[in-house]
Image (cartoon, rainbow, N blue to C red; front, side, top):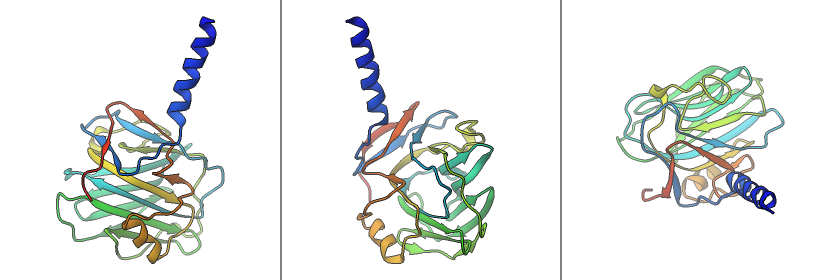
Length: 223
């Protein structure tokens, strides 16, 4: 009987760790700078990505560079990375190559950030608070490798780890969605206004995740 109760307990913990959770109106809070605290996002990606759109809200008072979204695969630590270089400057890495877009930004204020990429043209787009930034070209014809480790709160220098405290995120992240398509202007604005629809890679309203270290879930109190 004790063994049965033990296995039931283990199964319950496992299911809770990997359950789909609705985080609507909530945020992950990263309250300190560290080389360990992070959230691992679980996505069932078995095919290469030819296109994607990634959107999230972030609130931080950091002035140094930091990672917003880190997607690595075996042997490719910067396979897909959304990175903030400094106030008003965002970078997208695909397959280890980078483009950067600039925007006039108040500081510190919350930001809604979307980025998309299309393999056939190589065009990378950025949107900050619903406003499009200058389009850039990146890795035309490339395919983003599947079966990733996806981390927020840290930047991966190896598959699933090797974090650097100086690149860690401190602040709050919410409303994270990812699609395997390039969203239209109207769709981006709908996401910004709080109507994202169904996201088929990562969906904040049905998210699989694991908290690692000092990360807290709290209600979002900012727009």
